Length: 444
Image 1 (spheres, rainbow, N blue to C red):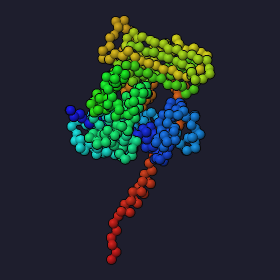
Image 2 (image 1 turned 180 degrees about the horizontal axis):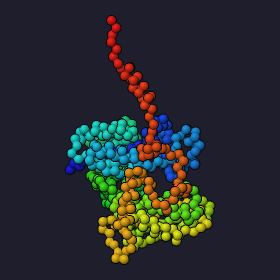
Image 3 (image 1 turned 90 degrees about the vertical axis):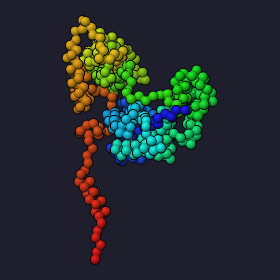
Image 4 (image 1 turned 120 degrees about the vertical axis):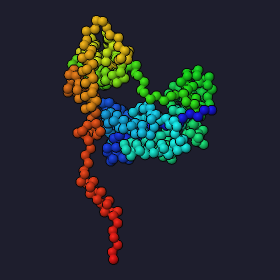
């Protein structure tokens, strides 16, 4: 049987909560939760908060429990989390050139040509370096396949005896690890498949690894069969070093307050169009279709209305200017007064590579000028921060924006939010250390 390269999954523990703790050490050991947009649902929780049963609970339903146990609550600070994620991933690239960023808090590492006898210690060094340089705790699972690396990572995170690193390669307890992993915890096995497997006596990862291949393919398709192969140490899911090109890009948010005016709806849709266009340009695509939708809150006892408009563009474009102009026309078609709108959104789709655009003979747009404007705006916003330059149609006050009343400062992305350090106190502390360790001469 061929020997496959080792793969490790590095996963940041309770990432959002850990990011908040980095710049506020007083939070260590205390329950911490992070809320979703508009402070609606708890989307991240520290281990202490999870033990209180707070994970994925609506915030308004658990306020009493939060006050009782002095739980620290934060609104989502995506700018901070994104920057901290980038710092972690940059460190991982120092240890191996083969890094696949899987999500904001996870990455797969391939160790082709590494000395596997020292791999566990090497991954402990990775863990210690990330903790020392960024302050984020991570867990690492090592195996021959991505599915087994995921399994190892989850067990390393739950069992403190492993010190945050578990290597399943040549592990004498490998079979036991599979038997102690519920089939619902296997990567790629969702709720419906879990119920199917339970009904057929397949309870854990070991049972799944020994399941009949024909039965698995019939009931779980080829993807399920790949999972079985991966549990047996045969790689079927390859490393992906470049993010896959998206087939559609959606920008949508619930409003921070009910919106009733056409002007505010236009501001929101213009803003969402701008954000979607930036994401599209990053993958070097141009859109042929743009759709806009509006809706009221279906969970409130109010008059309900929802509608959308699909626009086929005469020429595929990545220009924010052009996309906003079509989005505004779409809004005017579907907007109706007399309703309290709760959400709006924009979707760009039917992409073509930007360098292969098929122009129209009767196109009247000055595309060279639009491309220059777009390039300059993107460059300034990358260098000085998002929305340093923005279109007037996006509005200035933006009272419709989602509210995040408990958001922490942008410690790493805004100059005015940089933490302050008292140099005087630090100097006194350093001097005390020097005096303490100084060797004094013996008296005569």
